[in-house]
Structures are given as structure tokens and as C-alpha cells.
Amino acid sequence: AQSVSQHNHHVILSEAASLELGCNYSYGGTVNLFWYVQYPGQHLQLLLKYFSGDPLVKGIKGFEAEFIKSKFSFNLRKPSVQWSDTAEYFCAVTDTGFQKLVFGTGTRLLVSP
Amino acid sequence: EAQVTQNPRYLITVTGKKLTVTCSQNMNHEYMSWYRQDPGLGLRQIYYSMNVEVTDKGDVPEGYKVSRKEKRNFPLILESPSPNQTSLYFCASSPSDIFKNIQYFGAGTRLSVL
Image (cartoon, rainbow over all chains, first blue to last red; front, side, top):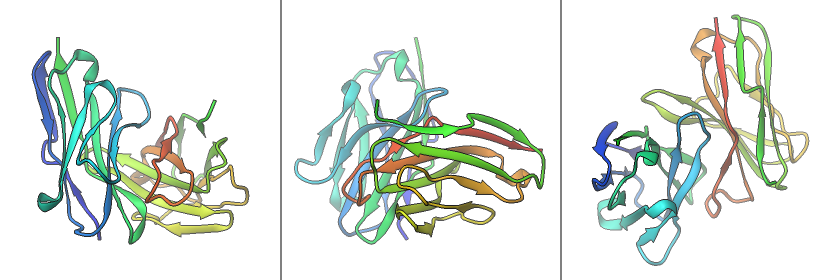
């Protein structure tokens, strides 16, 4: 079965620091990859997605992610974080074999002003 | 406004008292799903439905039931809630094949079972 690993459970950064959150998935076939964000007290929102094409995808609020097929990875990056980026970030994957979205365990990001 | 609506947002109940959490979407989506979110475990799928009258188990279906009699509604039923079902629940919908589409999430229902 497909699984998703997010190795950073809690990340604390100062404003303007750079961010990289790791995400690895297990299935080696054709996959679609997502990053969702959950701001405090809110529902999940799509940050960005990769379906095909350019492996470097750009999302909302200055976030980007790079799909590296050989490493089964889809890491999330932002050059300079803001206090408003404080949230929980979830990596997720779907594949052709299963009709479901498999989530990682999430990374809580705290950005101090 | 396109949205997924869950009710109630907060619910406190006691063990064994049947409850239903409603979910409704106004986007004519075929695919709907229920997740529970627990600290350190992320979101885990409970049940999903690919269309009316078509439902299937997700990863953690025990203790839950669903029905899909209409396209827009996908209620989650706990026949006999237990404390281990205390969690944050999200309903989501997607236009069709989940492989090709993003999911839209409701605001969540925080359930406490005493």
C-alpha cells in the first residue's frame, strides 16, 4: 500500500528564514502529489500539486515543491517564511491503483516574528 | 459559493449514543470522502464514495457507517460511539476520479466521546 513519510514533525523558524519540508512516498508507479496546509482552526487548503510536466511546481503564497522521481520525494520549499505561514503542512499522494488520497503525518511549522 | 459543509462543527456526546455528522457539497462532485485527523497520525480515510449508492471502506472504517443516497450528501454515522472515536473529522469532495483531481475539504467536526 502507498505510504507517505514526513520526517519533520515540528519545525520552528524565525521570520525570513528559509524553509524546506521533506516528503517521501513509497509507491514507484505513476503518482500525483500534493501539499495541503491547515492554518490554526481552519480546514485543509491546497498549497500546490504535481500531476505531470515540470517537476518544479509553484503554489500559492510563494511556496514551491520539487518532484524527484528517483528519490520518491516531493519536498516543499519557501525562500523566506512569514509569521502567517504558521500552520500544519501535509504531503499527500494518489496513485493509479487506489481511489484515495494518502496523507503523511504532517509537519507543524511555527514561525516566530 | 462552492463549498463543502459539515454539521455540527463541535459535538460532545456519551458512549453508545448514536450520532450522525452531515456533509453536503454544492459542486456536483462525484467523489466524496471522510477522514479523521489525530495528532501524530495525520489524516486517515474512513470511507469514500465514488458516486451515488457506491461506497467503500478506507483505512479505518471500524465503528463507522456511511450512505450516499444523493450526490450532494454523504453523512457519517456512528452507531455506538466510543471514546477512541474522539477526533477531528473532515469531509471532502472531488469532481470525479481522485487521481486527476484535487479534493475540497469541509471545515471539520470536532467530536468528543465521553
